[in-house]
Image 1 (cartoon, helix red, strand yellow):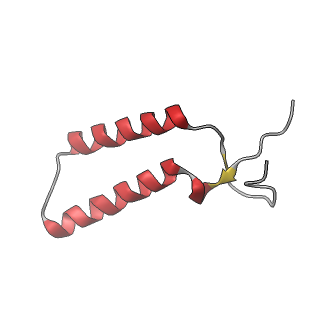
Image 2 (cartoon, one colour):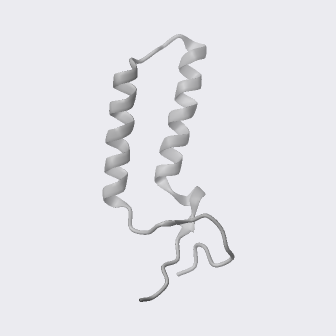
Image 3 (cartoon, helix red, strand yellow):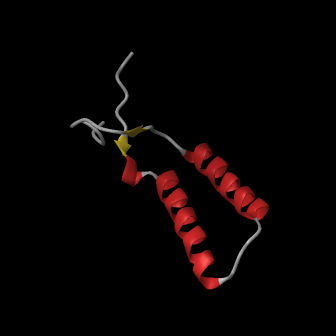
Length: 69
């Protein structure tokens, strides 16, 4: 079985969606525009499921060969 090479984590759409979610949590505490916890969780879960459906390769957490396939 061939060894799978992954991409760097910062090239992952899922990483960036979740990073933006963290930023959104911080922004809403400063602006006063607060979404319900249920709405936030539902939106993030739906986005993560959608991204999982289009994911084609794993991420690599280290090593020199990451991102090269």
